[in-house]
Amino acid sequence: MDGALVATALLMGLAGGPHCAAMCGAACTAIAGRAGALSTSMLALHAGRVASYALAGGLLAGGVAGLGGFDTAVPLLRPLWGMVHVGAIALGAFLLAAGRAPRWLSLPSPRVAALAGARPIRIVRSLPAPARAGLAGACWAAVPCGLLQSALLVAALGSRPAAGAAAMAAFGVASTLGLWLSQGAWLSLRGAGDGRRHAAMAVRAAGALLLGSSAFALWNGLGKALCGISS
Image (cartoon, rainbow, N blue to C red; front, side, top):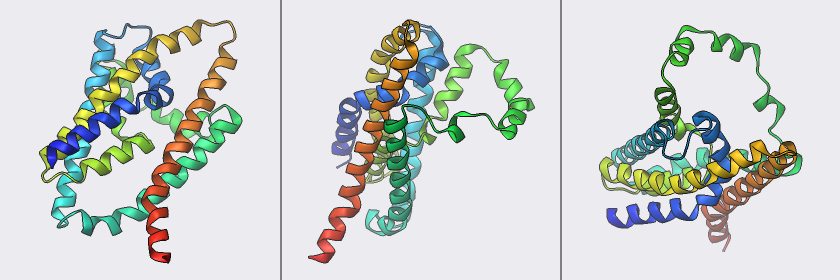
C-alpha cells in the first residue's frame, strides 16, 4: 500500500512538471538569481523544498492516523480543502484574464515594509545566498497549489508518518525536474526585448493551469460525491 502511494506521488510530480514550471519556475529563478541549475543556491533551494514537502507529508499522515483513519479525517478536511480550491479557481481565473497578479498580492503594504526591516529579516539577509535559498525552500510547503494539495491528500493515506514523508519526498524530487528545465526559459524571457508581453503570457498560462487543476480536483472530490448522493 505505502509503496503504491510513493509511486503515485512520484508520477504526479513527473506529470505535473509543466504546472510546476509555470507556477513556481519564475520564483525559483528569482530566488537563485542567475545561478546555474546545479549551483549551490539552486541545490539548497530544492533540498529545502523537498524537506518541507516530506515534513508536511509526515505530519499529515501521522495526524490522519491519529484520527483513526482517513475515513474519519475526510469530513474534517473536506470543507477546508474545498475552500482552498475555490480560492485557487478564483485566483487562476484572474491570472488568466488579467495577465498579472492581483494588486493586493503584488503591491507592498506598510506592514510588509515594516516587517522587512525587522531584526529576523535582517539576519536572514545577512546569510550567504545558499542559506537564504534553503530557507526559502523550507517554506515551499505553504505555497497555495492545487497539485501540491492533491499530493498531500495522497500522502495522508500512508499507514505511518514515514510513508507520508516518503510519498511527498518522491513528489518533490520528481517535480524538481520541471523547475530545473524552466530556469533557462525564464532567464531567456528576462533578457528578451519584449519581456513584459512574455511575462503576461506566462502568467496567463499559469492561471489556466491553476484554474484547470483546481477545478478538476474540486469536481473529483466534491462533484462526484454530490452526484452519488442525488442518485
